[in-house]
Image 1: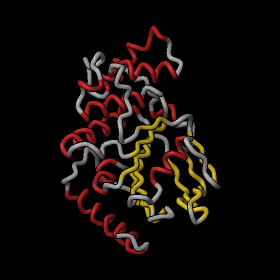
Image 2: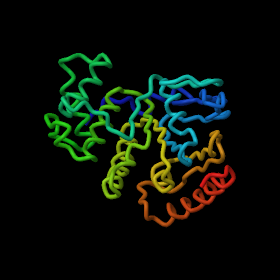
Image 3: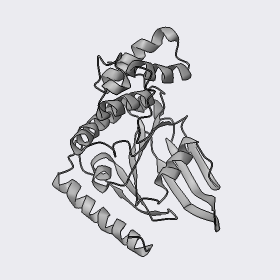
Image 4: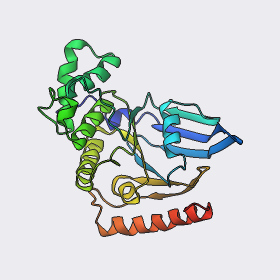
Length: 261
C-alpha cells in the first residue's frame, strides 16, 4: 500500500529534520521572568526517532511547542525541514465528525483535492490498522483507536517531522504496548522523523534511537544516550530494563540536585 508520507530517501538531501540551536525560553511570573528552558541545542536527523525525557515541569512540552511553531523562543533559533505535525496526549478529534472526516479535514487544510481525500483517508486508516473505520464516530472508538485516528490525522499533514507529546500516557498498559509496536512499524514504513516527549523511562528506551534527558527547571540537556538495542523491542526485554535503570538513576540524581521530590 502506498502511503501519503514522504519516504526517508526524499529527506536525504537535508542534514536535519529539526535543529534546535541555543534555545532558551522565559515566561513572566509573579517574581518576574522565569527561565523554563536554558540554552538547549538538539538536532534530529532525517528519519531519526528521538525521545525527550525528564521530570514533570522540566520544559519538555514547552520545547515541543517551540519546535511546532506554537510559540517563539526567548533566544536561540529553531529550524525544521518543513512544517511539523503535532500529536497530543488528548486525541483532540472533532466528535461531530467520523474518523475518516477528521482525517479528511487535515487533508483539506493541506490542499488535497476533494476528489482525493476519501481515498487518502482510507489509506491512512489502513496504515494505522483501522481499515473499515472511516464511518465510525469518535464515541464509538476506544481510547487506543482514537489515538490511532489522531496519528493518522497527523500523518495526513505529510510532514517529515512528527512531534508527539505523551500521546499514550492516558492509555492502559496493554493498549500502550500495542501502540508502541504500531508506532515503531509506521515509523519504519514511512521514514518520518519523530520527536517524542515522555516522562516514562522505559517508553523512551523502548521506542527511541536516541534518548535526551532534560534537567529539572530550567530545562537543560543533562545527558543523552544512543539506544543500540535492535528493534522490535519489548518493555520487559533485559537490555531495555538495564538501560532504563541506568537512565532512571541519572534522572533521580537530577531531581535530587534540584531539590524536587
